[in-house]
Structures are given as C-alpha cells and as structure tokens.
Amino acid sequence: MKFSEVEEASWPGLALYFDTCLIPYTGLSGGESPWEVTAALERLRDFMDLVEIPFKGRIVTYPAVQYGNPNDMKLLNEVCRNVKSGGFKYVVVMSADVAISEEDVPESALVLSRRSIDIPEGKPLAAVVSQKISEMWMGAAQS
Image 1 (tube, rainbow, N blue to C red):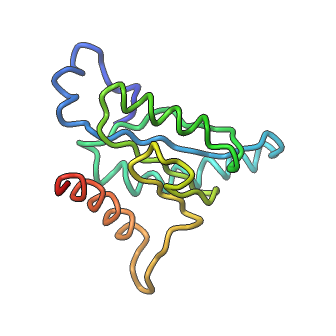
Image 2 (image 1 turned 45 degrees about the horizontal axis):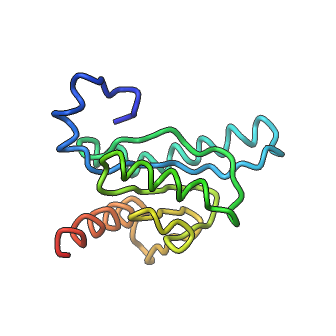
C-alpha cells in the first residue's frame, strides 16, 4: 500500500496490520540526464514490486529518498528512526542501483540492495527477496 492510499480515519484500525514500512532509496546525484533518471526510477519500481505485490497487506511504502551519497547515510538512518518512532516495527530500505547494506543503515530492519544481494544459482530474485522479508519477520518473532 502506498502512503497516499492511507486515510487518516482508517489508519488506527489498519496500523495493527501494517507493521512494516518500505523506504525506497534511489541514490541520484543530480548529474543524471532525464532519461537516466527515468531508467533509475523504473529499475527501482520493478525491484520494489517484488515486495509491494506479494506483501500488500502488511507493508506501507513511503516516499523515496531520491538524492544521496552512498557514503553519507545519515539522512536515510534518520528517516528510518523517525518512521519507527511513528509506529512501524520494521523499516525496509530498498535500492536498485546503490550497493548499501544493513551496516550502512543500522536503523533499518533490512536493506535490500539489488546491486549487492546474493542470488543463489537457479533461484529467482523474487524468491530471494521474499525469503529475506520472511526471515526478518520470523527473526523478530523468535527474539
């Protein structure tokens, strides 16, 4: 569910089910041409579909952090911290083009970076992403 689809009056009842927030991270520098920006956003959209579609009833997608330097994750960590303080139990950061990890964004519960995700031979990317989301939820349930 996109943040813009949530109505204020219905949120208190829905919040019990939507415990996970997805923060897209594009990592643009501002030096990209318009067609490069379009291609980057399309890659991110396609990657996010691997989470948004199968987990539609549990995840709310917030606006993307579009610009940023992968060496400075301060803003992304702050956004994750604020989203958690707003009531989300889990924050997942997704990036299609920037190689980032949980070490870069310790305030997140999970980082899914298309450029650095390990995909076993013969296993579809969608299955790997789904497994990582499930492991995040199951790991929290066991602790």
